[in-house]
Image (cartoon, rainbow, N blue to C red; front, side, top):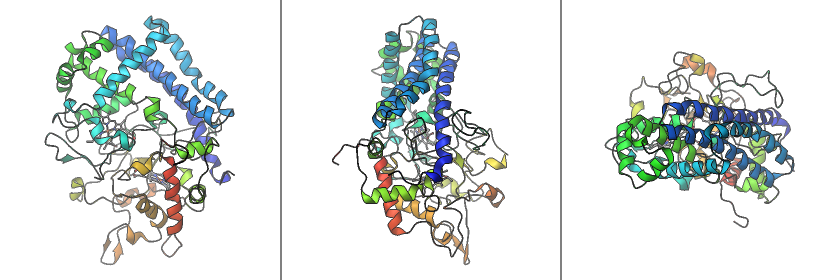
Length: 476
Ligand code: HEC
Ligand code: HEC
């Protein structure tokens, strides 16, 4: 029996719409790649553009695989989602003068290089930090350690202000929009879902390549430069493969090399079997191939129930109307009042606040008070493999996160500092932005009310969250 459906009809519509958006976005993505690659060496332009096209087609291919497992209605849905990409591939292929097989081969090469780059610490200023140092493949590409924020910089002692997120299931994050609307055929177009999408906690970039630029150049992360990256690639065992994929002159120009590195990383991050396999126990359950235990089922029910966790209103748990698997996020940027993490060095300055979309890391919405304190809702797929939670990494267990949701408003003294007997609620968001805070359940309570979830219920929700880990095999 499916649970709590009525309560989350709205969000089901939302995500359905998103698949359409994604298909469009991928077609646009392919086009942009064609345009964007023009500034690079001649060999690179066609390879990169075509790589983007085929990678996009690959996304749909993966989804159809997942859908095929999960039900028959999904096959046509996946086909329609793939449509715009097929068109794009058709149009782009003749332009590049390559056959489909050649295109696939180009993507394979670029993706394999992206993988080498992802694991290569020599790209960093210190020579010690790779993408994989903070995004460990064994932890769904989130950190292997339990630090709130990771160490980096030239001396490997510098820290930023945010927890490193998982890199899985980012393929369905739509481009950032201040006002997100459903597509007309799949949801209610008149509903403004508010700020949605974009990569990083504040949604400040839309493409994997643009994102990769951030840690490579950041003084508290990899602290590198296009010149250093080029020198590293030239000296790497894969230099020959790099020239082979991007053109023999690519390493003669720092900017061309850097752009190719970003493109390769972006392509690698779209490898379906590594980044969006849809192989969790919950996926098997949705496909009718696994049973949830009583605790897991109860946890799912509480997760969906509008009056209890109401988690699914933001972390969508149902398949879309067209049968695509749930992403466990609607990708909305939302303020939930996560407490200030006083262990972070940046927070020693009492005037400093990480306000998410309105800055300081993100600069284009600076001064727009309605964007202060909002962060992108993360997927909960593989969340049990993470060791630090929320944008500032303040909590280190799912139980602690669940207690925050259940008791933030009934027992705020458990989460915020108490000064002279008075609770300093929402201590990481200046009062003038409190209007941005979400007030829907479970955040609709006041001191003295019963928490939305008790300890036993929290245990069951955590049991359910554990079914979202990829790599499930029947019998374990
Ligand atoms: C020092 C640790 C560290 C290193 C090294 C690092 N990252 Fe990250 N990564 C982070 C943090 C922290 C964030 C969140 C940043 C933010 O919200 O401002 C992030 C975010 C991301 C995101 C966006 C995820 C999302 O949910 O939107 C992607 C993609 C990503 N990193 C890829 C990479 C790649 C590729 C590299 C190597 C070039 C890399 N990272 C190196 C810490 C790191
Ligand atoms: C109103 C939307 C909303 C609701 C309802 C909601 N969440 Fe979240 N969730 C978010 C946002 C936004 C974040 C990131 C907040 C931040 O870091 O500032 C988040 C973060 C999380 C995280 C941390 C993930 C990570 O990678 O760090 C977990 C776990 C989580 N939510 C679980 C739940 C559960 C369980 C429920 C139900 C009890 C729930 N959420 C209800 C929006 C929501």
